[in-house]
Amino acid sequence: MNSPPPSDDRPTPGRRNPFSTRHVRPGALPFVFPPGQSAAALVDRLRAQGWRGEIVGPHGSGKSSLLAALIPAIHDAGRPTLLVTLHDGQRRLPQSVRWAEIAAGTIVVVDGFEQLSAWSRFRLEALCRRRNLGLVVTSHASVGLPPLWTTEVTPELARRLVNQLLGDESAVISPDEVDSCLARHRGNLRETLFELYDLYESRK
Image (cartoon, rainbow, N blue to C red; front, side, top):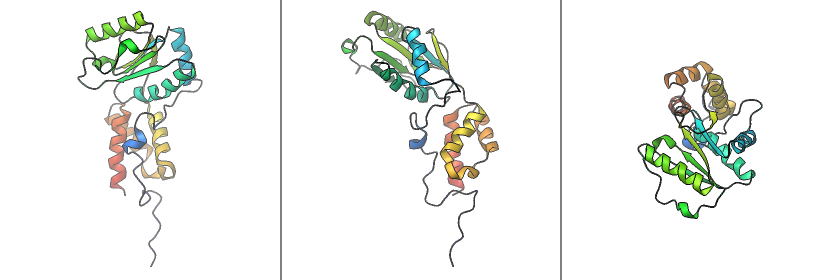
C-alpha cells in the first residue's frame, strides 16, 4: 500500500531545513528595501555625505545583510572597499590589516563598530580622514557619523522573509507563529529564524 502524500501543513520529507545557516546568513537572505529605496540610492546618499555614514539598529535587525547589498553597489560606483567584521569583545582593529597599503578612495566598512574602544574608534576615524578613506560602520547606537540607515524588523517584513524561505511550504508555519516568535525575541530576526529552525524540525 502506497504511503499517503505529505499533508499541506507539514514539511516535505527529505527537504533541508530552510532556516539553516546557509539560507539565512547575511547575503544569502537579501536585504529588503522599502518601496522607492535601493542600494544604489543609498550609495548616492553616501557619496553626498563624503563617503561617511553609520547604519544603526539592534541585534539581528539586518545591518550585516544591508552591508552585503551595499558593498557591491559601492564597487559599481567605482570605489573599492575594505570590510572589517568585529565580534563581541573585540576592542581593537585586526592587526592583519595593513593600513599603510590601502589605496586612497577606499571605503573602510566596519561591521560591529561599537565593539571598538573609544581610542580605537578615534584612531580609525583620524586615519580615514588623513588617508582620504571613506568610512561606513554598523552599530547598535549612533557613534556620531552622518546617519545612513536605521534597520528595523517589522512583523510584516518577518512574515515576508519567512514565506520566502518556506516557498511552497508556507503553511508549515503560520503568520501568528512568526509574529509571536519575533515578539519574544524583541525584533531580533536572527534569533527568530533560529527558533523557527527548531519549529520546522519538530514538524518533520
